[in-house]
Length: 440
Ligand code: SF4
Ligand code: SF4
Image 1 (tube, rainbow, N blue to C red):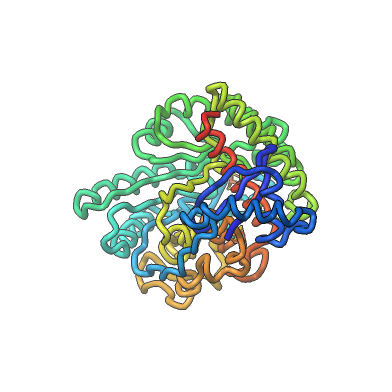
Image 2 (image 1 turned 90 degrees about the horizontal axis):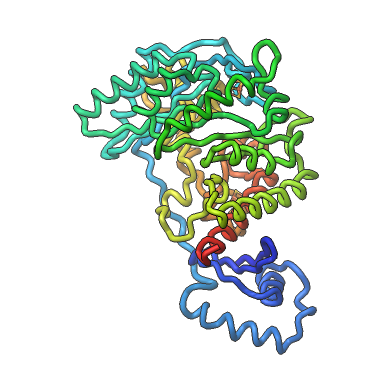
């Protein structure tokens, strides 16, 4: 399918079948939108002009760069587990208002994963991974740094098993940075493939939500630690990750603040919550979408000045670098990827943790619930309602199953508000790609 759009004053046609992006003039964009997306009034364009545009589109059509056939539904592999999210700690030293994890406790007792359970999880992953060589483990919480010694023991055990099995482990930790001291920094730089550090942007924005147990803002407690970590990181991966809410719809200022604070790898996610004054609602979408364009403009200005940074949501790959399986199965939650909570119970992902309807098994044995697994393995881009008509499908991969379930009651029904933001980010990412390819 084709999608015509405008971004920062430029007009584009995107062809989802071939992944081709074409810059065009305004009339062509309007023509394609009206004729092929049923968006706009075709009668505004004179018939002779319409014929001229069709004549210009024809060579692209013939060479497979426009109106190309889309890949057909592909079967999803079900037998290999590739990644685990280890809830190393169901406790937290912050009390963020928007926390989906109930401030770390996941609506249950505050508890820590024992080293024995973490080691069992590593064995489970190796056993279920089949021929897959590279395995991923995320240390997650609550706040994982409250259990650094357990993380160290788990990593040491996995490294030992690497030698015995030929597997390769890639580790990530997500942290609020409150306990990020020199010891943790050294360990992360040695062992973590990626580290995700939570920071919401401007001090007043961060402090309004991310509070300590005493109710004080945590910005001043973490900012220097995160800066020190990033300075020490060299060229290893990290993300400074923020969350924006209805309280900071001008979130682009927070992204720019983070970039100007010296962070060059940034992500800023819309909040997932039903807390009324924080939740993103339909009436916010206009301001959010224009905020993405404002951010894009400043992001590209910085790029042109040689001060570019990596903004996760503007990274769009149209070169086919991602295989079809990945494009249609998204993160693989509940099928190739699972969460393990402190007592060893297994859930499809961290967003389902503690919901007994989604309890799939235990790292202590007994196998995985085939019924629940089949819900997730059977859910892909091709089963999600409305995705077939969406231009962003092979970039978005069908959205987040947990998000879909929590907002729409079904992993196969995408949440419209998330979709609108995703589509805008994809358009911005495509414009950024074109801008960079054209030399700025
Ligand atoms: S730091 Fe993370 S786990 Fe802790 S309260 Fe904040 S959002 Fe929740
Ligand atoms: S943006 Fe929404 S409709 Fe489009 S592919 Fe993603 S989940 Fe499906």
